[in-house]
Image 1 (cartoon, rainbow, N blue to C red):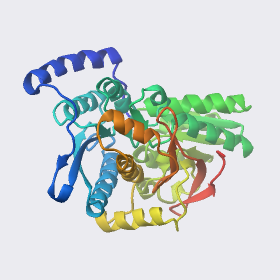
Image 2 (image 1 turned 120 degrees about the horizontal axis):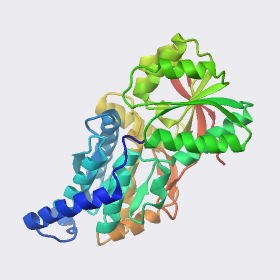
Image 3 (image 1 turned 45 degrees about the vertical axis):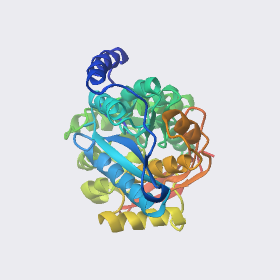
Length: 390
């Protein structure tokens, strides 16, 4: 998930140098403390979390926060040896706020690991600090391909945009679709997906009939949709978040844009169906393959989430939940809890049975997870093909 422009690295370093100077004066320095002791040998590990609780992506931040809190609650009820405490910070979907939050969590709270940020621009802004401070950054939502080379302390359990875009390009060509228009949000998320899709689709003999963009939080898309309609595509590749997608789908219907709509995992959110209603039926999108509905981990997560929060889990709730569980699995083999030991333990995780699917980390901290194809049908999110990426 990506929002906003990415803060330049030189700007980050200048801001951090000044902020770091003030923090050192106020608080001194030192590495992350060992987990605090409790009764009967019980210990508490404190980690950080950064996500958009306000701002453009607050909906997804709240979903992720719920998933994290559910996993923490379950761990603390079941794990007599190591309790978990989360210090939560709001980045407001702004890279500068993500940098400030990360700096605070490391310098003041002295955490060895931070879950988040979710938006790619925020994760990329904080990534250099993670490597400098040797503190793990573990994002449940960032999908920019740039994060692959962000450094040894950076992990994510959300698939890269490059992978999703290529899977959709291949799927469309296999379906005989050779004339596709693109409508993308104008940020890291939309730009990366647009570029990787276009490259793959054209390499397979496809043609892009039109490429249009819009600003996040826009509400009127009629001008772009009119140009797309005039280009006479066989389908529309829509790269947006559920909030905008619902309005785009409705306005496309109103303008008579009678082509199939294709997208990415961000389409799988109840808010899109709530806004677009029956107009959303038929949307096809890529999605990491989650467990079957009768899988015990998946079934437990959905039931526990509904019991705790009174609603179905939304986008990124499951990856937030899994991020905590993966951290706790990494901790099982550790006696010293710091960024270096956690990074090494996380990197060794293979075939983790998560609520969001079966996962392993590669050598870059990217998640290895199969991606399939789904469709919205009568308001439900149903599988078309669970294995096109294999």
